[in-house]
Image (cartoon, rainbow, N blue to C red; front, top):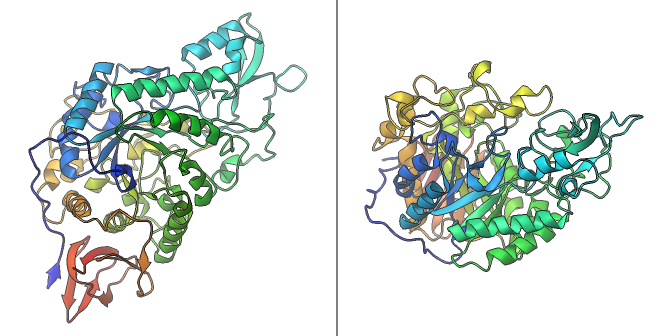
Length: 560
């Protein structure tokens, strides 16, 4: 008989308040919303908080547990909101604090939790602290809140050290002093509009503890910490001695990243979080050389989760997948933290496009590849991810099977990294194109006034409207997978898998009465039928106790 996923259960019309089981975050599915690209409520072409609020029932019905919102704070938007001018205000492009309050309340009424982004490594150059530091000049107490240093060379014309910006070029910018003369330099590991805070200064720590309380009092359920491996710099800001530093990121402990001092900060923050009821959480965006060092961030008295970037960067290859799964579970088990699994986010090429291309091209590429192959692998990879123990992250639009938009004209690009000669490729705009809700209409239902990045022709056929109720659609695959995951305690929970013998190129494991088999090869394979098929990313045929699993397909079985 032929087996394929069935339609999702009908959405419930009842609302619920956030309560849930204890340690909800250990097996949660968390959905990332990039607000400017999710839904536009006022027709200005830019997504906003009210747009997100109106689409919360969709997320409830999709079956996720929590929503993580990328930054919506007051910002000049030099880096899409990751340059914050006021951590206690909403940027007018996204709405107001009243909109944020309404969104949190509505989400809770629907049984959804809200996680907001926090950007503690750096501020905007338009932050009041930084503007005051510039105005008050060298030696002022305000400058001590950032990393200001005199330059090297006879006239201070050279940067204080050899650190390079993640976005390319020196990590230092020289300022013009109030008297009009060339003066000190300030550190910015990202864009010049993003000066790094000096976390050795007590005022910085005091300010962020206050910011935490502000949003916790408003009712947020947690924080995703941007550049959680940053903040603390090695004493003396020593030279790195290399001029290709970007190639070292993620491979070595750098004097500006993953310094041990960050953990003291998080222990202080955890004390604050634990004062609040409702099991609020911290999630670390921590790029570290190894998953073992990532585990340092989720020790019992620090953060709750850390993104698993090693998994995100793994190719669609059975041996590689088994290795990173084992290493992740082995690293997290001693500290009692759940593993996390993620395939896409707002900074990398969508996995439907990454998997459409040959391995080895990295996580930022500008090649469409084989679209059919990429979608087939993406669906299979998503089912594999959702079968693993721990928490899973879904980036908006991946449930629609969206590819990256790889042919955006240069003149519409807005990624700041794109405009710098050296550094990141600057192709992040491709994963940030507003998502389609309807088959037709202005911006395919995103809003009534177009979209801030152009959407490709054919976007409507990938829309929520086009895929809803459509057997075999990627949206219905996700809906069904999340419903099954929620209904079965042996999915998500725990900290181990039992590997099963399988043909080369096949990942197979058991978790209680549940079995997952993922065929990463380009050919069909025969495996034992492990019971009743719960779900499959492609068409599976069974006969005489054997199952034929097509190329690039994942199957879920129940032995009960």
